[in-house]
Image 1 (cartoon, rainbow, N blue to C red):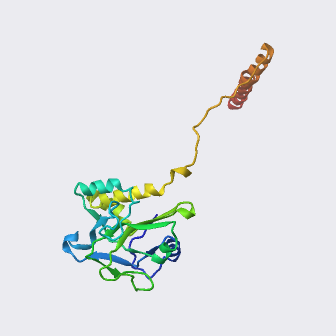
Image 2 (spheres, rainbow, N blue to C red):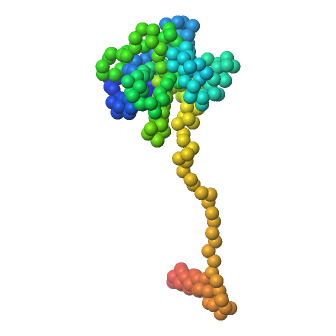
Image 3 (cartoon, helix red, strand yellow):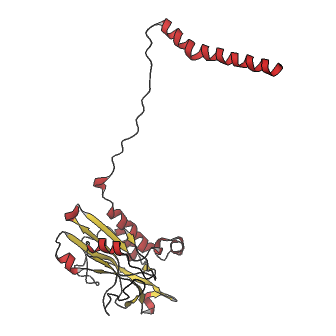
Length: 242
């Protein structure tokens, strides 16, 4: 899982870019903001209301519904109860369609996307040229799975601060946090669990075949240490009184 908050530095995540390319997901070096004042927190156009990709709609309002996206049930229930899915300052992601089209074993789709009124501005990176076109739906979180590579999975999130103490205490991001936790659970493959057996206890024992042997053992264990300790006390007493 990659939590990639916007970074204003002139640097590209080259290795992460290469890894994500194989899953048909690209990183935008930008940050997303809202143009509709009803879709962002008061005074902060970068903390925006967003949408959870719909598993029941084959097209979805994002144009990318996914019938396989079934693990975010709890987040969906929170939305149905009236909670808003809020994403703080986030970067966006895009799809490498040519990679997805040439790999029938690969599934790649957004988990969270912004509204049609959201826009992206260049922010950080070396190129300074974003992949955003006006009117495009911006993906704020996405996942991919490749069944041809031992069910390899990847999860990308455009912001990491949604899970920090400040956001948690304010309760702004309870829905996005729920979606993230469910997504991480999806990443976990129970079929490769480490099999750690329960602890077992064994007691050492000594088999004694005769009374004489038992007496010798008792002498070694009890009598001899007592004699040695007694001699030590006598030597100490003589030196003290010398």
